Image 1: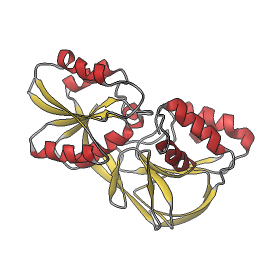
Image 2: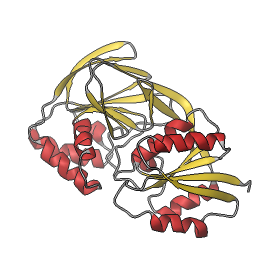
Image 3: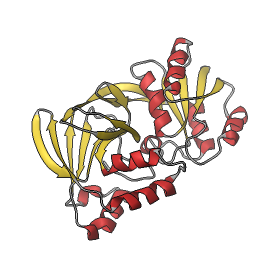
Image 4: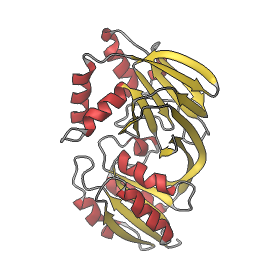
Length: 288
């Protein structure tokens, strides 16, 4: 097999699992045709800087060793480049990896890198900023902000925050323009999905594809409290489309008027203006 030059970008603080054993596993599990370098990210946006330099230095792939935030920071630099994105999943949710069926077991994920089979997928932009899986407003963005402020990581912490914040959360009115058509709605969640799930197999967009040139506008409408178990069951069984409180609209461009707090691949963001979200077809090579 043709030799490949690979950079591993490690987020030391993502997830709850230690990454030391995984890094040590590289020397014994990577095939001889893979030459590699490992570097730690040190601050926000550092993975993007490291990836930009890797493109200049002639690497064939950059592997994000972390969660969806790290995957986003590496992936955004690789859009429309010849360099492939790889993933060793170490996040709290690993939504991108799970959607692309990249193994959560690290040794199996390393074997995928050995095979070096790639597909070219769609990405998306929100006001010019790249995201790979989901952007959203409403309750999921609210929980994302609270989670970012927590000192603890992991699914249990996220779940506890979601339970605590649900009580007292009020649905909001939204004004959207979807491929030129106006929509005004009250919603609990609005998610713009390129990929199908938030992570941990919570499927907000069961029908989403990263290869169809479209995004899915997913709306969870206000629902009675006693419907919470039904919504959660459908969310985690990839059956949310069966809920009468759920709507999904395919689109290439979405404008959200007068937005405020939102998230990009789980990372909290804030604005005082409109959001313009667009699909970028066939723009990122991924090892999967």
